Length: 91
Image 1 (cartoon, rainbow, N blue to C red):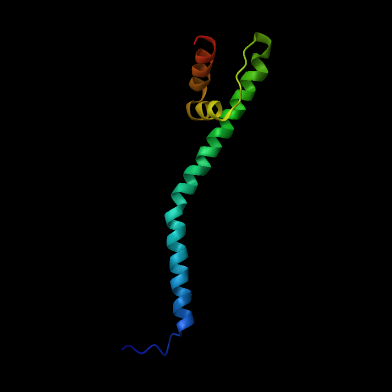
Image 2: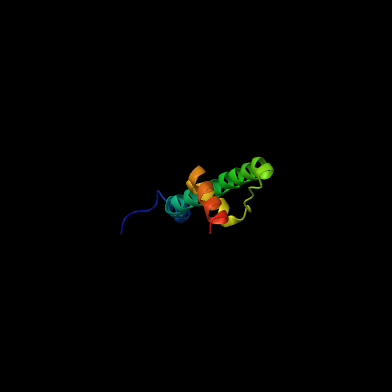
């Protein structure tokens, strides 16, 4: 059995906890980035819908800023606005 007089049990546990936390952070970092990007795109879509409603009010153009519309405009941008307008007024 190796001599562990240099290391105490608590220091080994501390190292194991630090390594475990590092691995958990590394494991969950990508999904957290994706969730943050998802929310950022939804916020951008909401801003685009707000601008369309603000400037389109005089023309009678209005899109409801719900979660689905925000996500569509957030991910597709201006083509998403056009897609929603076509869907809303043509279909």
